[in-house]
Image (cartoon, rainbow over all chains, first blue to last red; front, side, top):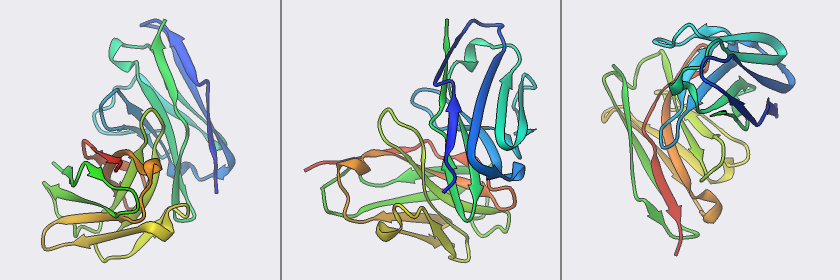
Length: 108
Length: 120
């Protein structure tokens, strides 16, 4: 089983700042199968990034994904008030999905 | 535009079977473009994939839940279903259904989720 670790657990930033979220896999993950989701309280997760770096439909270009192998990054270039949320990475491999534990981005 | 809606009992007794249905609208469940999945989230915790089905009926499950999970599809009703047997309090969660891109295996459309509590 591939285990995903996300860091930091919580990121306290101010609007307008840059957020860098890390997702590390216990073994190599195909970049094609690495996705990022945003979840706000009481809401379902929302797809942000798929294939490690492709933005989903309607996602602003301040969100970007990068990485390969075991290390992946989600970057929010300038935080908007609506970006404060929990972010999960997810991988698919060997006919199973796993999610990371999440990074909470909160207002400093 | 694809829309998914979960339905089912909000309260299930311990040792009984949890049964949920996901109704797909705005598109056909029989499309070759998607798989269909169930994901859950215990209160205050992260996301856990439960299992996935293709319209043909082929399935794959989370190994940690496999012995208790059955996912089925009804193409005539454009819906798919989840059964989780022998539930305990640890199965209390928000249960989501989602569409999964067949090729890149991301979950792009999610239902709003339904809360299931296991309690006597």
